[in-house]
Length: 170
Image (tube, one colour):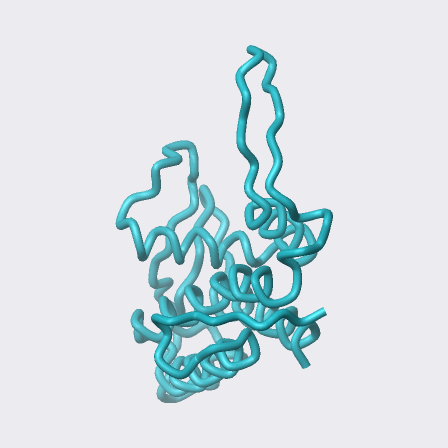
């Protein structure tokens, strides 16, 4: 069920669908210049922020995603927001969103508070020039998310989140 949302600091983007279309436009820019960090960061941020937008537009009244309190093992009350519950839910459905969250928070806050996180982004240097070969078929320079010694292709991860949101919103 769609609820009317009234964001007032988003210029004319006033629905999840419009933010998704912005993500598609950001990806089109990234696709033309896949080594531009601005385009990569904008894509990651839009993809993650769709969790907030879809929560407010479609799931805010969903009983599964209501604010609640729990008591931890020390007997301390702990507040759990509905949006956090929803974000955990969608991250289970599309695990790649967790990387978009980390990149989005890393972009916003500069340094993540959780010092146990091992992920980082970097430019992986390939063996071929992207001007001579298709970046999807050859080992060319590309952005990756590195966890320990494993490199996860940023664009592949991003495209999975775009497909997830496309299935939700279209």
